[in-house]
Image (cartoon, rainbow, N blue to C red; front, side, top):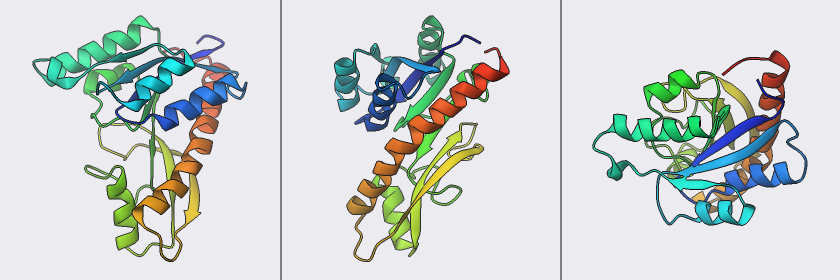
Length: 205
């Protein structure tokens, strides 16, 4: 494993968590990691503008451009391999990771989820749907979770969590903003720790 871990961030929308990781890297808080690629599953999203401003290579790989899921996955995997990616970070990426990528990057795909898993995870639980569910359930606490990715949505081993209180009068929007603030702190921290652990272990991709 190289002394600096090459990171790809997969996005589908605003890309604020991707930007938080890149900003942490620029500030010297990720000495063992370097974001070298951003892949978006959608064209025209804000994440691509953020990657461009940060000087990070980006590309769009959209499912409709391919005849089937296997071809879509193959194109994504080829892009990761071309950049010699060591770890993959999902940041609001709305496509399910396919089996070949899971095999190739087993134990090296991270995701951040805007709730305290295992609660409020799984298919359909993303964005405002998560925060609506938290409020509907009457939860007193929420937060975010960074976990490893496996074959099931939001079921991989938890690496770290950060909590926030659910306040009286919260709306999905106000709760989302409070959780997102913690996401921007937690994800770069976990990426740093995960990268340092890989370097120490000498594990090979």
